[in-house]
Amino acid sequence: MGLWIYLDGKFVNEKQAKISVFDHGLLYGDGVFEGLRTYSGKIFRLDEHIERLYKSAKAILLEIPVSKEEMAQIIKKTIKKNKLKDSYVRVVVTRGKGDLGLDPRKCPQPSVFVIASKIKLYPEEYYQKGLSVVTIATRRNLTESLNPAIKSLNYLNNILAKIEATNAGAMEGLFLNNDGYVAECTGENIFIISGNFLYTPPISAGALDGITRDTVLQIGKTVGLSVSEKLLTRYDLYNADECFLTGTAAEIIPVTLIDGRIIGSGKSGSLTCKIREEFHKIVLEEGVPIY
Ligand code: PXG
Image (cartoon, rainbow, N blue to C red):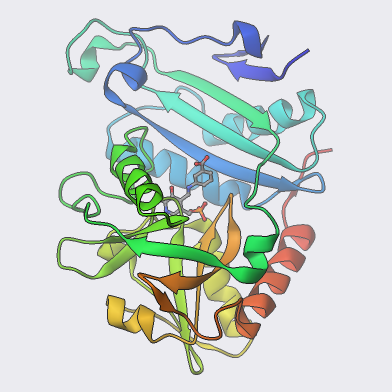
């Protein structure tokens, strides 16, 4: 049967879900996207994801052809149509079809599509033993060039980083910004715990304003940690008691090896485990019901 895909106002079977070779999303990476999760039939932080999508679009002067309310309905309908309860949802808005040439004015009609599918997580063992991370030579895009706060279809900076990490035999790559401070990983934000402090780099260091990141900052406070956004160096990471990554796909995953340095006990720290438990409670309690 295959999945039902929402594509420009219609539901089509995945085999029929096709985009033109003249779409500037494909030709130039000109477009924006979001990745959401549903847990037990509820969409986690739907409004926040929609807000971020429209902010990304505004930053690249792309007018999304449906309202935020319509977008919320489209997302819900796509999940329903595929009868999913625990899913990963990808929302994409491309610049649309246009003649060759960079100028976005060549593209009169942006395309919107939504894929609701199953999510593949890291194998469970990594949530216990943690990931190995290496610093990569490729620097995070300058905020003044292609701001990492924009979730654009142009993810080559991240893909190059992922390739470097894989080539180095690590599970994830750590991005530094052009000043040498820690920015984020290829598709996750990064946190450390030192004593009673929970730290993560500020968005201005070259990170995406992660929705899981925001949730974890709130959880940190409720579990009694002093939470702060601070510029971090690799030295801070190497000497942290605990380190973990956050993202919609990975949720909260410990990091136990960075550039060959064992972090903390070398397995998931107790506070990381606690934050993860709290996160799992929140995703089941909160969220917008689909059914
Ligand atoms: N940094 C970057 C560069 C990301 O792309 C995050 C941090 C975490 O943000 P959220 O809001 O998810 O906590 C991301 C998110 C995918 C996929 O399909 C990518 C992300 C999220 C979900 C799926 O590759 N990136």
